[in-house]
Length: 164
Image 1 (cartoon, helix red, strand yellow):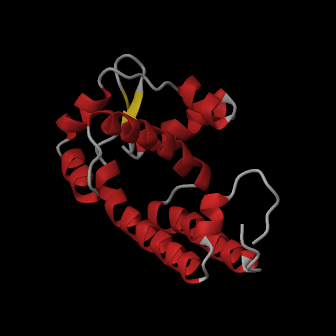
Image 2: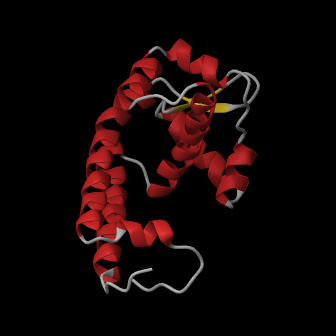
């Protein structure tokens, strides 16, 4: 791994990306970061199920999710419970239950008849603009890392000593 001495610049770019994401969760979504992360666990299950069939483009993902019935088909045979979300996040079940209830109240999540937690109908209405801005900020960070020639260092990074 090259010793280019640019670690702090890359670390700063990453920290600014995370700080911006954190701020926008409260400002744009009216969610705490913890509630946002609970939502992301449910989204990641959707992405996992979607990728089992076909890896989609950004636009196709949103087009399919607008047709809520198509989304329901991708999650019909899966059950993501409150307990499983709590285990994934290593958080108390009751804490996660309260967060999920708030997300259900906002119709960002819904509970299926079998108790499984899935995305609610309002999810797609609020997330498109948010994800567009997040993608733009992520791209900005990646471009900075590429410009500073840090991408290859990160690709080659394993558990060895950090030398960049």
